[in-house]
Image (cartoon, rainbow, N blue to C red; front, side):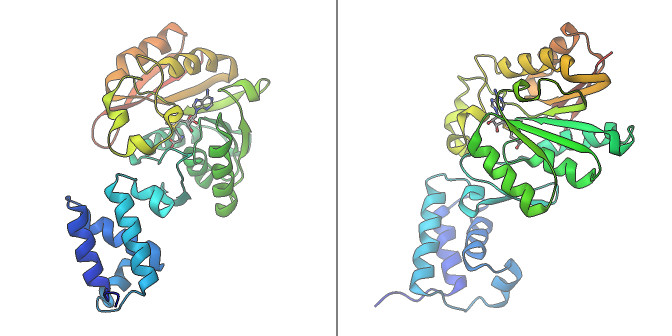
Length: 281
Ligand SMILES: C[S@@+](CC[C@H](N)C(=O)[O-])C[C@H]1O[C@@H](n2cnc3c(N)ncnc32)[C@H](O)[C@@H]1O
């Protein structure tokens, strides 16, 4: 006879299997995802029993988490800027730190009159940044590019589900928008050194490498974006890029070499250097 698993018993068992600081929370997230219930419902009915099929599916998810699969890939979703986004192994999992980039973009966008405002998100992945901007700037024209067709398909389905209008293009950096000019260009490009040991640790192991690594110093893509953006910015337009906390000086140099003005470093909520912005003269 199969063992009967109450919600509470299943959570306790999964917690001891996962055995780390946030094991209980993760077990609860996985069970709620599987049963399509809220955590409040889980606490209300701790004695309810899983069917054999549900128990098998739950411990299968817990097993995958034990192997290191990110929670966001197991549930297929991640919240960003209050939006519920679908994610999968073709897309980077949006990070809370990236909301700093959205914040500064909105700050500069407020200086423009909206119907004329044109923005571009380079390397859109799940569409996180472009969708956050579209949710706040409903009248602006928003474009987004990614090299990965699979990531773009996810971004497009997120836009559809959220009913937000974005023009998506496949291609490398500015290639698909050759004749456009933008008031604001934002990008969270790959910026990790290709030899960084973190790439083979934690969640990063499961995320697409073309979304993460960028040459030996991590700056290959930032070099291209910063030098080429001048051509695609309207006069007095802004480029804003996310980068590693230890890349701030190099990135500021790249902005200077390309002739930007009003170059500024912005720190994230943890106080780490996170975003550099510059204006086309
Ligand atoms: C760090 S991820 C950022 C994803 C998303 N913007 C976010 O913040 O969650 C970088 C993205 O750049 C895309 N990418 C990498 N090389 C590219 C290229 N040459 N042209 C366009 N997109 C590229 C990757 O596919 C990936 O989606």
